[in-house]
Length: 416
Image 1: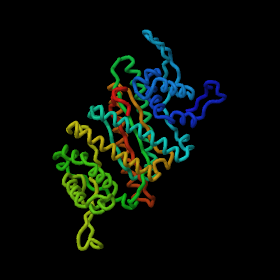
Image 2 (image 1 turned 180 degrees about the vertical axis):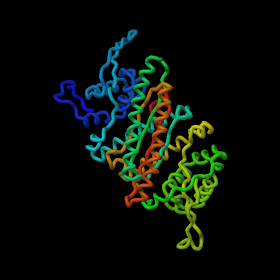
Image 3 (image 1 turned 120 degrees about the vertical axis):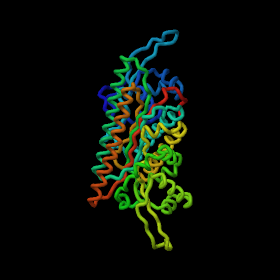
Image 4 (image 1 turned 30 degrees about the vertical axis):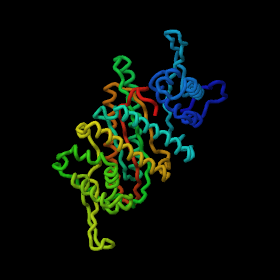
């Protein structure tokens, strides 16, 4: 991350913190570095393509980034007409904090940078949904899951996400070489990865470790499987119920009281999700304030993960609505972690996104790697629960997400 060259007469190279502060000082600069990592461009071409300001303003950003060794001059492009020749630049690297540099930042700066990174990822999601590209490919991947882990499991999840990020970068480089020779039109895509500590909040640590319930019967899963998924994805409340019940057993009255929903509505939703096979009764309690009644406690039977077949059976409107709800639920988890100051409490958290230009083979390899990473994360969740059940260690809650989806070409939509 350091630069050994003296730039514009500076007596010594800029430090990693100085360089990162410059690129994160303005969202336009971060976009410039991200996009010029893929292609060479002039300031005027960038301003015209991305519509983020006047050519003179963009040129000043280019100049500042060149001064701090984020951009390097590549060549002069003849105008081909009466215009002036243009200087073309490339970014040699992405603006990514390594763990050592990140640890040097005060918490307030970590939160500022993290918020900006996630906001830009959210803008990529919104652009793709608006352009209709997000769900254009049925094998796109977008999952997030709250994970109950011990320290070993937490380290493993972060390691596999870091490995996936490196694999995506390597595939981008390979695809660039292949498309250079094949002239295959590029597939514009976005990959986003994250893993951050989430507050346990109202949940008691002991609630997070009950035995996993038995899976629903194959007959339940096969019957109207598209209806099962649609009835969850079409409601933010249903998704929230599934999120909480994947972590702990809850009753309808407990959920309604903790999250401020009408009891009758939540009771109806619990019954619906039980009928569809998404949740099941794990225990009943009586006595206390129940006045002779019995209170049922439920757990999720499985995560709400729609595979390629299930997703392709939904209508485009259902897909778009479902994808947006998945993102908004994830955004709620991010905001909750920021509010509790857990998101950046530890410097080894992972938060990255990258714009990709791939060929078909590159797309397939990225999606395969994302799916394998997701399976590895879920397996580590099970391993960690077994270890926690046999120890006295307190569990930690980590939220992890993996996204890979097609994006509109640069300039296809106005800047958000």
